Length: 369
Image (cartoon, rainbow, N blue to C red; front, side, top):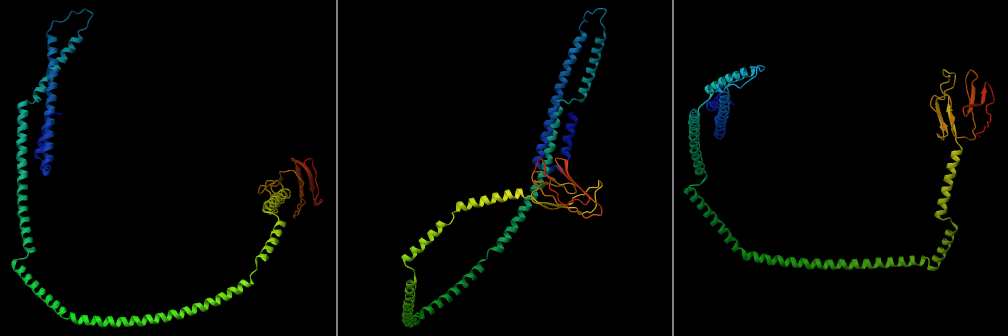
């Protein structure tokens, strides 16, 4: 970092007006800028020392007697060393012009500190005055609120007199109630006497009601007992029950048990499956009424197919294939204006060919059955 850039940043920081809102931030930023300037000058001084050492070494080398060289050697190396020395001398002069002495640096730092202190005083003094004014205003407002909140001595005296009057009125009312205490005692005795008489009358009424209820319950219980005896007389005795159980047991022995019934159901289910597998039915319709381009009939609709694993059919195909060997009955009906030809293939070879008005049904037996 060049020293002029650090000084320029410090001067801009001290001269800025928007940076003085937070004093701690200003102080911290200023100290950081000063530290950067000092560090940059220290690095620059170290660099200058190193270059001066190199120049001294180069000067000693130039003043020393030249080494013995042969006629075949070139003097270009000596010329390059001279150029480097001149360049180093120029760099040293530039660094001397740009360098700042420690005294100047210290003076600038002291000036920056004084300027910072002056600006701090300039920024803090109005704040202190403002805080002092705000304290005075708040104190006045607090005193006014306190005076309006706390009652005066005259108001307290007025409240005390009002309380005394109310207390005297309450005490007079209490004395009047105490005077009528005897009347209240007489009234209480009269009420207790009337209440006892009413309770006696209610107790007698409840006792009569309980007596009537007991008579009704006894009569109802006697009727229920008579009905229960009649029902018991009509019930079967133990001998009849044992005979009925014996007959039921014999009937149960003549019936099939659950295991036999389940086995029979399984046998029937297997038989049905076997018969369903052996009796397969398929029916297809030629619904378009016109032959295909190859002059064949396309079976377009499947009406019945009890076992698709036996009869293989594709929609629009001109053939139906029976996959499993067995005994099949073939029936076909055609309603058209020309004589169709029906072919039955076994293993891809024609086994039956019917054309024109041939026989409607014809049994076929092959080596596959």
